[in-house]
Amino acid sequence: MGASAWSVRGRFAGDPEAALDAIKARVFAEGDYLWEEDELGRPDSVDELYEVESVQESGTHSVLDVHEFISATGEDDFGTIRPLTDEELLTAFGTEEPSVAGFDELDKAGQLPYERRPRWSANCALLYEDDVAIELAIWGVSGE
Image (cartoon, rainbow, N blue to C red; front, side):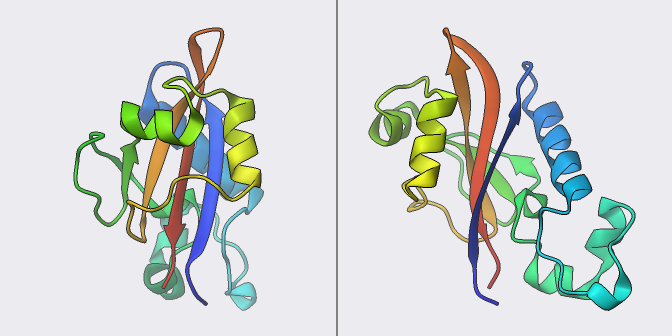
């Protein structure tokens, strides 16, 4: 299987780590990740999922493949999540405070900015309503 682009968003209440944990829990519970080991049955936990050899080699092609926030100017690496810079937000969304609708529009059109990120890493952006950050969007590329 080749690489897969993916995106997800979830409620944001001021703590990006908590938002990431909630998003990952939802993705895992919904089974919204690559699972090629049908004969094994789905794992009961994320930790169990990460123990499966095919997951270690090919990933899940989802937000479950990333785990560490870095700065907007940090160097992307395996498993990192880098927020867009203000300039990148303006270029991609036309604003430094993109809306949920604006994100969904770019996502549906396949126009989220992927160019600066290597595989097995992600970008993120806060999404706003009335000048208040209400959701965290994370998108990336996983797989070989």
